[in-house]
Amino acid sequence: MNTMKWLVKREFWEHKGGFFWAPAVVGAIMTLFLAVTLIIGVTMGKQHGININGVQMNSLSDAMNASERAQFLQALTHGYMSTGAPLLLVLGFTVFFFCLGSLYDERKDRSVLFWKSLPVSDGETVLSKVFTALVAAPMLTLVFATIVSMLALLFMATAAAFMGLNVFGAVLSSPAVYLAPFQIVAVLPVYIVWALPTVGWLMLVSSWARTKPFLWAVGVPLLTAALLSWFNAMFDFNWNIGWFWQHIVARGLVSVAPGSWFGFMNAQAGVYSASHENANLGTLVIESWQVFTSANIWIGAAAGSAMIYAAARIRRWKDEG
Image (cartoon, rainbow, N blue to C red; front, top):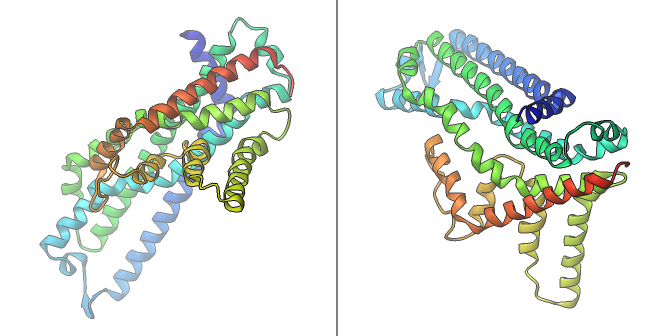
């Protein structure tokens, strides 16, 4: 277990730019942009007042009735974590390119020869990369997303106070504010299992590609799908090409995007049909875990695990890129 800890630390320090600095910088830019936007909004509101249906109001407290204040408070306390959603997009790109270069880069710079001289098996090395991609990187991103979201909540509550609506007491006493980060973490097991096909495919390509792994990883499934679509159209084979695009191409390339299971499962009638209207974090957690009732996720996990195993075996004898 101690060996695995140091292997994960190695991956972190070698890819600190993607795992730490990318979400940190993006989060800082988002926070700064939100702060400037709120300052401008409060300043203009103070100068010109608040216009509601042609009626000029001096404060948000005057502009909102009791029902609207309750809706505003619910949006703040239940939806503030959505502010950090762009960081999850950054996570998807980071994990994609980390897995794609995880085994190729060490062959390219021949550092694989050094690491193979150590008493660490190929399986342990590959598993440390999988753990880094599917557990360590998402957890670190969630930390930054939580910080950004908390700051956004503070800024919006402060802006509302400057505009005459004090919500600090209601926000700080709401259990939803403190529960939200844990609800996001509760989705992590779904992400780990769902992302296995893409992680496995990218690492498999990374283990054997001699050059340009991106073209191999992306080009092969896209070209195959395009050729199948062309043959199907030319010779009227009546193949279900849409199935191939969805379950092979899209599933194999974009499963590392957090929340991508919603799009896949919505396309399957009877498997996932819950409405997202007025959905809160609790609803999204429940709907995410419903993905485990589908064979799609388990077939993908089995295929991904097989490809990860194959990548570890290939690493045993392929030393150079």
